Amino acid sequence: MMRVTDVHEGEATDDDPSMILDLEMSQRYHHSLGKASHFFNGLGHGAMFATRCDTCDATFFPPREYCAVDLGSTSWYELPGTGSVVAAIVVHSPPPFGGIEAPYVLGSIRLDGVDGGLTHRILGTIAPLDGAKVSVRFLDGPQAHPLLGIAFETNQQVETS
Image (cartoon, rainbow, N blue to C red):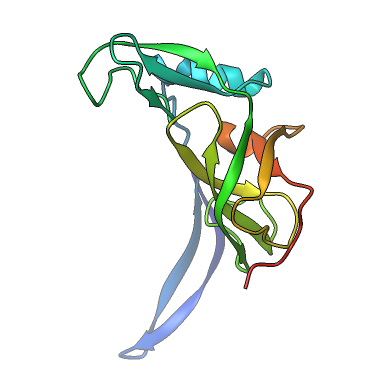
């Protein structure tokens, strides 16, 4: 969808002013999540899922349909929703996708129960120390993206140096 929000004169060239249109455009996407649907449905129901290789037991988060080690099929299993901070930083500019007020804490988190983790928001405005234990918190209300429906929290709020 596109609409004109303002019309005004631009800079004159050869004594002929140009006309400027301010346009607002929006796009709607219909995107299938396919095999990852189980993961995103879990987030909407208060659960985090990973995958495990059916032949070699390698684990994956983010989840994968096929094993990166031996290309075997994987099966879903639920994670406990806990982990440890590997590194964290306070970010003072808003993210480009919106939905989070600055400043906010962004942390690299190694998840318990899987060989992997993610970089995600940690609630609060003080970065926890490396190794701090965190737990997933499922947030209320609609979000711009399903992954924004979770954040991590910790009781240890010590500034990093």
